[in-house]
Image (cartoon, rainbow, N blue to C red; front, side, top):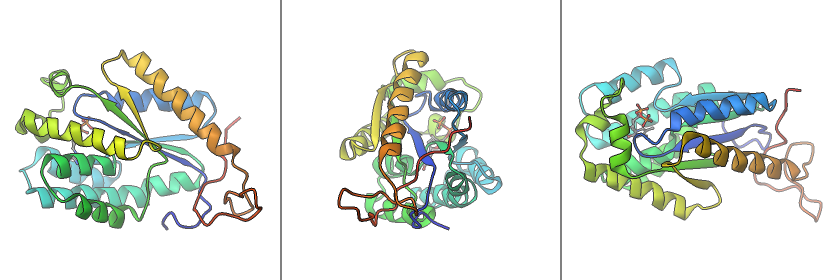
Length: 245
Ligand code: TYD
């Protein structure tokens, strides 16, 4: 089932950024904070998050290098499985889903980085994720050299970190910034050079305020927002988040 029923209750947050931006650490920290505040929360990642997705991850990150189009198809195959098996059911249960990378990574890496057409990549991601789009996306931005040096020598060096050149990663970073500039309502851009505590505090404040803002919108019985005229919107907005108290 895809996101067109108008009855969704959760909140979908994605974390994006170039190599070494600290997304995975922030995903865990944010989840701990949200759970402590009483919100049900699920953390997942791309590529991965399902059995098939983790198998595809091995091929993508540690196998032989596919051509960019095959790359895009494999990332989206993992995404299709993750959206249907993990993200949508969690949103239906009213959870906040934090996903470490999502469609914007394909646009930044395979699009801006590897030169695949952005329109085709968007269409492919729409097909894979069935129209599922994040409620909010945090871009943790930092200079390419700094990010790569944070990762260099780490335990899980992937094909992208070891084989791609610095110019590729510069295009990826510029791509992320362009995507954020094009959708300022969805994106929050955070300076990843700050200490992790400051990054966490900045994201948490913005996230909690967006959730609170969303919960203020009056709803009809089907969970759709009700405008001042009293008619329900046809937009598939979501009902207030459930809190475990
Ligand atoms: P990972 O080890 O998870 O890196 P990170 O901690 O930076 O997220 O590896 C994921 C790699 O896959 C990363 O280099 C970005 C790349 N990637 C794409 O090229 N396209 C995509 O659609 C996604 C989701 C990731």
